[in-house]
Length: 209
Image (cartoon, rainbow, N blue to C red; front, side, top):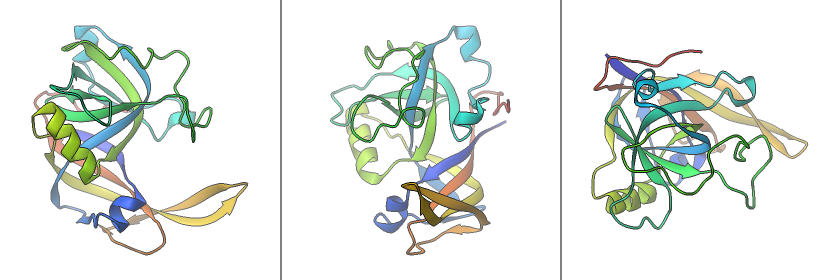
Protein backbone atom coordinates (compact mmCIF):
# COMPACT_ATOMS: atom_id res chain seq x y z
CA UNK A 1 0.00 0.00 0.00
CA UNK A 2 1.02 3.66 -0.31
CA UNK A 3 1.22 6.45 2.20
CA UNK A 4 -0.48 9.60 0.92
CA UNK A 5 0.23 13.10 2.24
CA UNK A 6 -2.12 15.69 0.71
CA UNK A 7 -1.57 19.44 0.77
CA UNK A 8 2.12 19.56 1.71
CA UNK A 9 3.21 23.19 1.59
CA UNK A 10 6.12 24.48 -0.49
CA UNK A 11 6.81 27.98 0.87
CA UNK A 12 7.63 30.84 -1.54
CA UNK A 13 11.17 31.13 -0.19
CA UNK A 14 11.88 27.52 -1.07
CA UNK A 15 10.94 28.22 -4.68
CA UNK A 16 12.57 31.64 -4.98
CA UNK A 17 15.75 31.30 -2.91
CA UNK A 18 16.38 27.54 -2.82
CA UNK A 19 15.33 26.86 -6.44
CA UNK A 20 12.93 24.07 -5.52
CA UNK A 21 11.38 22.57 -8.67
CA UNK A 22 9.26 19.51 -9.39
CA UNK A 23 6.53 18.25 -11.73
CA UNK A 24 3.47 16.01 -11.48
CA UNK A 25 4.53 12.39 -11.80
CA UNK A 26 8.11 13.07 -10.75
CA UNK A 27 9.82 11.21 -7.90
CA UNK A 28 11.80 13.57 -5.71
CA UNK A 29 13.74 13.16 -2.42
CA UNK A 30 12.17 15.34 0.26
CA UNK A 31 12.39 15.91 3.99
CA UNK A 32 9.17 16.99 5.68
CA UNK A 33 8.37 19.06 8.75
CA UNK A 34 5.19 19.76 10.66
CA UNK A 35 4.33 22.85 12.70
CA UNK A 36 2.54 21.16 15.59
CA UNK A 37 -0.43 23.01 17.10
CA UNK A 38 -1.82 19.99 18.93
CA UNK A 39 -0.07 16.94 20.39
CA UNK A 40 -1.37 13.97 22.38
CA UNK A 41 -0.13 10.59 23.53
CA UNK A 42 -2.05 7.63 22.12
CA UNK A 43 -2.05 3.92 22.84
CA UNK A 44 -0.16 1.44 20.69
CA UNK A 45 -3.48 0.20 19.28
CA UNK A 46 -4.64 3.73 18.34
CA UNK A 47 -1.25 4.51 16.88
CA UNK A 48 -1.39 1.60 14.46
CA UNK A 49 -4.71 2.62 12.89
CA UNK A 50 -4.46 5.63 10.52
CA UNK A 51 -1.00 7.23 10.31
CA UNK A 52 -2.28 10.18 8.23
CA UNK A 53 -5.66 11.85 8.10
CA UNK A 54 -7.12 15.26 7.42
CA UNK A 55 -8.30 17.45 10.24
CA UNK A 56 -12.09 17.22 10.67
CA UNK A 57 -12.31 20.79 12.03
CA UNK A 58 -13.27 23.28 9.32
CA UNK A 59 -11.06 25.87 11.01
CA UNK A 60 -8.02 23.64 10.57
CA UNK A 61 -8.86 22.15 7.17
CA UNK A 62 -5.35 22.78 5.83
CA UNK A 63 -3.77 20.78 8.65
CA UNK A 64 -2.97 17.07 8.77
CA UNK A 65 -3.04 14.68 11.70
CA UNK A 66 0.02 12.42 11.82
CA UNK A 67 0.42 9.48 14.17
CA UNK A 68 3.72 7.77 14.79
CA UNK A 69 6.56 7.01 17.18
CA UNK A 70 8.61 9.73 18.89
CA UNK A 71 12.33 9.69 18.10
CA UNK A 72 14.46 12.14 20.15
CA UNK A 73 17.63 13.54 18.64
CA UNK A 74 20.95 11.82 19.24
CA UNK A 75 22.52 15.20 20.02
CA UNK A 76 21.27 18.74 20.56
CA UNK A 77 19.43 20.20 17.58
CA UNK A 78 20.09 23.93 17.32
CA UNK A 79 16.62 24.38 15.79
CA UNK A 80 14.87 22.56 18.64
CA UNK A 81 12.04 20.13 17.98
CA UNK A 82 12.07 16.35 17.63
CA UNK A 83 11.33 13.59 15.12
CA UNK A 84 8.09 11.70 14.59
CA UNK A 85 8.47 8.46 12.65
CA UNK A 86 5.32 7.79 10.63
CA UNK A 87 5.37 4.23 9.23
CA UNK A 88 9.13 4.48 8.92
CA UNK A 89 9.20 8.02 7.47
CA UNK A 90 10.83 10.67 9.71
CA UNK A 91 9.01 14.00 10.03
CA UNK A 92 10.66 16.91 11.82
CA UNK A 93 8.32 18.41 14.43
CA UNK A 94 8.45 22.02 15.62
CA UNK A 95 6.11 23.00 18.42
CA UNK A 96 3.76 25.99 18.33
CA UNK A 97 4.49 28.38 21.17
CA UNK A 98 3.74 31.92 22.29
CA UNK A 99 5.81 34.67 20.69
CA UNK A 100 6.00 37.25 17.91
CA UNK A 101 3.91 36.41 14.87
CA UNK A 102 1.60 34.03 16.73
CA UNK A 103 -2.07 34.66 15.91
CA UNK A 104 -4.80 33.19 18.11
CA UNK A 105 -6.76 30.50 16.26
CA UNK A 106 -4.39 30.56 13.29
CA UNK A 107 -0.93 29.39 14.34
CA UNK A 108 -1.10 29.27 18.13
CA UNK A 109 -1.07 26.14 20.30
CA UNK A 110 -4.45 24.57 21.03
CA UNK A 111 -5.36 24.91 24.71
CA UNK A 112 -6.24 21.20 25.01
CA UNK A 113 -2.89 20.08 23.57
CA UNK A 114 -0.16 18.42 25.60
CA UNK A 115 2.31 21.13 26.64
CA UNK A 116 5.26 22.01 24.44
CA UNK A 117 7.62 20.54 27.05
CA UNK A 118 8.60 17.98 28.03
CA UNK A 119 9.06 16.33 24.66
CA UNK A 120 7.57 12.86 24.16
CA UNK A 121 9.56 9.91 25.48
CA UNK A 122 11.51 7.80 23.01
CA UNK A 123 9.27 5.15 21.46
CA UNK A 124 6.00 6.75 22.64
CA UNK A 125 3.07 6.72 20.22
CA UNK A 126 2.09 10.33 19.55
CA UNK A 127 -0.55 12.08 17.46
CA UNK A 128 0.20 15.60 16.19
CA UNK A 129 -1.86 18.06 14.17
CA UNK A 130 -0.49 20.89 12.10
CA UNK A 131 0.66 22.15 8.73
CA UNK A 132 3.08 19.86 6.89
CA UNK A 133 5.68 21.43 4.63
CA UNK A 134 8.79 20.61 2.64
CA UNK A 135 11.85 21.36 4.78
CA UNK A 136 14.48 23.78 3.50
CA UNK A 137 18.05 22.64 3.02
CA UNK A 138 19.47 24.25 6.17
CA UNK A 139 16.77 22.53 8.24
CA UNK A 140 17.55 19.17 6.65
CA UNK A 141 21.28 19.59 7.33
CA UNK A 142 20.79 20.41 11.01
CA UNK A 143 18.15 17.73 11.64
CA UNK A 144 20.32 15.08 9.98
CA UNK A 145 23.33 16.19 12.02
CA UNK A 146 21.37 16.03 15.29
CA UNK A 147 19.62 12.74 14.48
CA UNK A 148 22.67 11.13 12.84
CA UNK A 149 20.47 9.73 10.07
CA UNK A 150 19.04 10.68 6.72
CA UNK A 151 15.57 12.23 6.95
CA UNK A 152 14.92 12.50 3.21
CA UNK A 153 12.66 9.97 1.50
CA UNK A 154 11.61 9.47 -2.10
CA UNK A 155 8.11 10.83 -2.84
CA UNK A 156 6.06 10.81 -6.04
CA UNK A 157 4.26 14.07 -6.78
CA UNK A 158 0.64 13.20 -7.49
CA UNK A 159 -0.88 16.68 -7.72
CA UNK A 160 0.28 20.32 -7.52
CA UNK A 161 -1.79 23.34 -6.58
CA UNK A 162 -0.38 26.83 -6.92
CA UNK A 163 -1.50 29.42 -4.37
CA UNK A 164 -1.15 32.62 -6.34
CA UNK A 165 -1.33 35.82 -4.27
CA UNK A 166 -4.10 38.09 -5.49
CA UNK A 167 -4.60 40.98 -3.09
CA UNK A 168 -4.38 42.17 0.49
CA UNK A 169 -7.44 42.88 2.60
CA UNK A 170 -7.38 43.95 6.25
CA UNK A 171 -3.68 43.13 6.33
CA UNK A 172 -4.20 39.51 5.26
CA UNK A 173 -2.82 38.21 1.99
CA UNK A 174 -5.28 36.17 -0.05
CA UNK A 175 -4.27 33.43 -2.45
CA UNK A 176 -6.05 32.06 -5.50
CA UNK A 177 -5.64 28.25 -5.83
CA UNK A 178 -4.84 26.94 -9.30
CA UNK A 179 -4.02 23.36 -10.30
CA UNK A 180 -0.75 23.24 -12.26
CA UNK A 181 1.65 20.65 -13.65
CA UNK A 182 4.90 21.97 -12.17
CA UNK A 183 6.47 24.11 -9.46
CA UNK A 184 8.19 27.07 -11.09
CA UNK A 185 9.65 30.41 -10.06
CA UNK A 186 6.90 32.84 -11.05
CA UNK A 187 8.20 36.05 -9.46
CA UNK A 188 4.97 36.71 -7.53
CA UNK A 189 5.68 34.90 -4.23
CA UNK A 190 3.39 31.99 -5.04
CA UNK A 191 3.39 29.04 -2.69
CA UNK A 192 2.42 25.50 -3.69
CA UNK A 193 0.59 22.53 -2.21
CA UNK A 194 1.77 19.04 -3.18
CA UNK A 195 -0.08 15.75 -2.88
CA UNK A 196 2.68 13.22 -2.21
CA UNK A 197 2.77 9.43 -2.36
CA UNK A 198 5.44 7.25 -0.77
CA UNK A 199 5.87 3.53 -0.22
CA UNK A 200 4.70 2.69 3.30
CA UNK A 201 5.77 -0.04 5.68
CA UNK A 202 2.20 -0.55 6.90
CA UNK A 203 -1.05 -1.40 5.10
CA UNK A 204 -2.90 1.65 6.37
CA UNK A 205 -3.28 4.69 4.11
CA UNK A 206 -4.66 8.17 4.64
CA UNK A 207 -8.07 8.22 6.26
CA UNK A 208 -10.39 11.00 5.12
CA UNK A 209 -12.64 12.33 7.86
